[in-house]
Length: 196
Image (cartoon, rainbow, N blue to C red):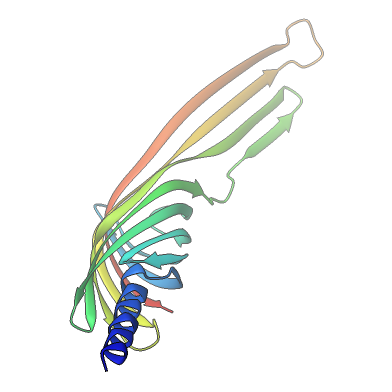
């Protein structure tokens, strides 16, 4: 009898150890976002893939952000879940780069006097997003996610204008003008997503 009791206790402790140590679980999150800033209201989509362990999730994300200028945010996401019965409250933080995907507006005009050329070069800059949300668990790791947060995206455009006159003559001249514009956008984001 004592041996059976000892065996049962050992099995119970072993089962508890399996629960507490946990195992990393892969999740994929697909999200739609409504983006509201000072100058516009727009939308975006994101896909985040990573692993969850003991209430912490870490993953890699990418998306399309249509606020003012179309860009591609590439970021790392860290999320902490706080269980509330069957569902969970969570806090998240994203950080990475915002890559502009803007139609080129390069120009070139040529005539007997010379030529005029404009070249635009877009460069990636900082992207971050953070906030809190609520996860409604459905079954087998599937969940509906609703969140709200603050987001910042930025990029830089370098515009180079070249004027060349009297080509091939002693009076040949060339002027190059470089203009640098930094774009920074602070927005409020409301996201709805599905985790599986």
